[in-house]
Length: 176
Image 1: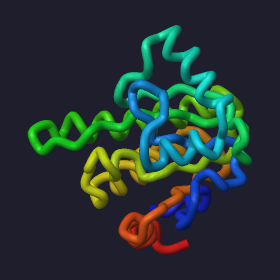
Image 2 (image 1 turned 30 degrees about the vertical axis):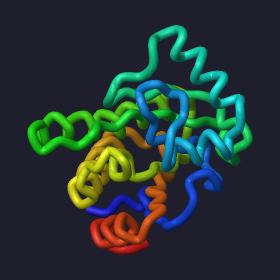
Image 3 (image 1 turned 90 degrees about the vertical axis):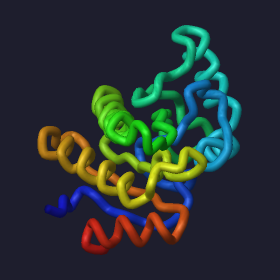
Image 4 (image 1 turned 45 degrees about the horizontal axis):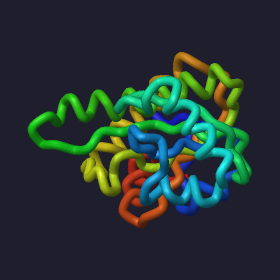
C-alpha cells in the first residue's frame, strides 16, 4: 500500500531541502565514508562538534539507535545520526531488527523535534553490506507502518545515491 507522503529520488542527500536528513552513521559518531563522510564534509564542523559532545555524554550511539544534531551548513535544520547494523548471514534476523530500529528511532526523534519533512539514505547497504533488496523492504515497511500511526511527518524521501537502490525503491513504491 503506497503512502503519498513517501517518495524515492536519486541524488545527493546533502542537498535535500527538508527539515532533517538521516545520516547512516557509525557508532563513534565521528564521521566515516559514504553517506556519513558526505554529510560531515558538507555540513561542516558544527555537526562534528555536537557529535563529540554526544559521544562524551553517552559514549557514542548503539546500533539501531539514533541521535540528533544541527544540520550545520546543510539545507536541513537537523541531522539524525542512525546507526545501522553490519550484515551477517549468521544473525540475519537480529540485523533485520536492528535496521528496522534505526529507521523507527530516527522517525521518533524526528517527531520529538518537530520535523515535518525527512530524507533517508539507504542505511547499512554500503560498506555494512546489508543486502539491498532486504534493506529496502525493511525500510519501506518500517516507515509506512510508522506513518499509519503518526501523521505529524508530512514527507519522507528515500534518497538513493546508486542506481541499484533507486531501482529497488521505485519498484517497491510503484514509481514516483
